Length: 316
Image (cartoon, rainbow, N blue to C red; front, side):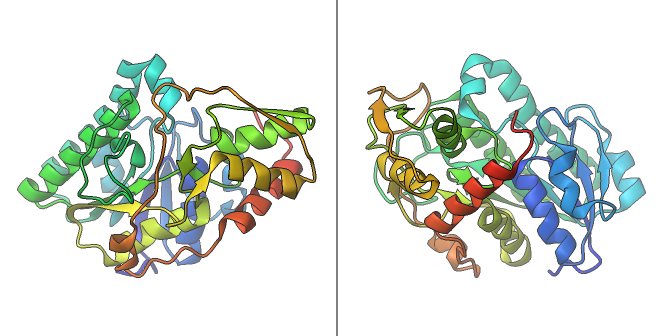
């Protein structure tokens, strides 16, 4: 496909994943319009592309996609806007559904009516699997979400596939696993770094340390989205987006402590938070077959994340 001179929309482009994706798109020569209501996204996340992109502060649930298309004649949409975390969905399931599923359905319907011929890349989540029945997880394995967040992401995925099949909308989705990296201000890696910074003598961790994740560095995650846009079939299919390497929470905490030069006592809660699965290991062969290869290993990614944390001025 190529992006030199392409008109690209990134929803949620001022957010964690979105801002890294925007940087890579600008570097590739794309003309980028960002749609973000800045409820969680941050203008400072776009400092590296200041003056090179257009930011529209809009809510995907209420904006006019036709007006945007008439103005920008965009070729590709990377749809990353919405709630990105399980805990808020457990507390506010209707809100989560309205923004994640409802916003995506509204986007699909607007482009069906427009007879749009571009390509849509949707950021879904590994949360659609819930607690998997076998490992490693393959895209065709059963989907049994255990949180409202996972259920909403799965519903949006399935509607995307239906719209692709019935209305010829070119679309593909990435199921992201345990993303981390600079600019992320939530989730387990950020939380552990923050706790160590506050108290380097004792570290409290949810669970018992045996929970397993596939931690995926954000720049690799952004690169995966671009590869799907360039090489995917875009017939409504999905791709596991991960590193292909597993790590326990205990191993993760030990590595972060080593990088930060501390030796705290680990204190485990013994139970995981509602909606969190026990173990994820991932088959990424479908994405690899498109040309994807992770480029940042976990230790290097954690080092970069710690460096960002220690240099950031505002982490709230």
